[in-house]
Amino acid sequence: MAFAPSGPEASFFEVLDQHRASLLATLRRGGGEPAHEGTRLASSSEVLASIENIIQDVITSLARNEAPAFTIDNRSSWENIKFEDSVGLHMISHCTTRKIKSDSPKSVKNFALILKILSTIYKLVQSNTYATKRDIYYTDSQLFGNQTVVDNIINDISCMLKVPRRSLHILSTSKGLIAGNLRYIEEDGTKVNCTCATAVPVSSNIQGIRNLITDAKFLLIVEKDATFQRLLDDNFCNKMSPCIMVTGKGVPDLNTRLLVKKLWDTFHIPVFSLVDADPHGIEIMCIYKYGSMAMSFEAHNLTVPAIRWLGLLPSDIKRLNIPKSTLIPMTKRDQMKLDSILKRPYVTCQPFWRKEMEIMGDSKMKAEIQALTFLSSDYLSRVYLPNKLKFGGWI
Image (tube, rainbow, N blue to C red; front, side, top):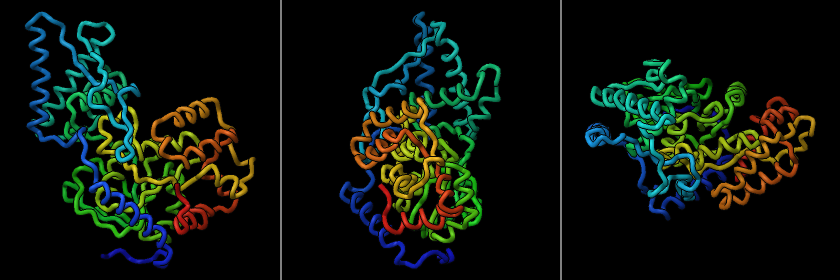
């Protein structure tokens, strides 16, 4: 393979290789990737037929002088969410629903907007063309009001039809970045050669990328763009080569999550997360690993339960003698977020995570990754991450 070897000696990766062997053994014991019900890539004819059935129901209701309504799974209730260690958070098969009624003043506008977007999706699928969520918003920005309305309706439609958003021919603009030892070909034939020196935007059509090639020993998910750029500036990727780095620039968009999932499914290399030692950072890590309530109906296509927490661990703050002056007091909102995470079903199977969160809660202090610069400007890339990777400092 044509990736230039410029990283550490082979012995550096011994613990990483053992970790990968353990992950592969777990997969083999489970019979490979678990097969689950849930959203799957649907053919164009299936999507068109599903939309036609929904419209037929609307016409039937009108013919009976009844007010049409859409029945949608309730995505905002923990009662409808099940946790499995091998999948993360996903919707139960027989969950509570909510009705979007055409004769209710509260929901009549939402009913009309769903119809409008269903019409747009039908035309896109029929003509085999694609549009972004932003494109749909600008078809009538005054009617929709804001982008969030469009985003929520598209997720509702995806949930209602039980197909992933990609099958609806709707793309979202990617905000994520990727760097490192990776090559692939886009659906349109464009060859993408990620390097360790500069970042490449995450594709807006992850489903379409093919011929992925890498010899990476690990994938590092970096919470914040500023940290990601600093690691690039410090030449971390080259020094730790072969590796891959990804950032979703905060809360990850769908494409960044799909890319991480695709890299895991294709190569089964260890995946680590580097987040701030605060409730917000932990929440972001949990989204990559276990998914979110809002997208639980598509969990099987998005979650990577094999992800490990590399840093910044709350226990690292004391271990490294980071002074209190570089820490930030937790706000009431932080405490509420931490309490919320501690109550989630996946924390029970992560005792080491719970211990770290309890350390944070007891200290009532949080820390950004930048707190490590107190030790030295390049401590993160020169000492902290290499030691963690070499000696297995993840949980």
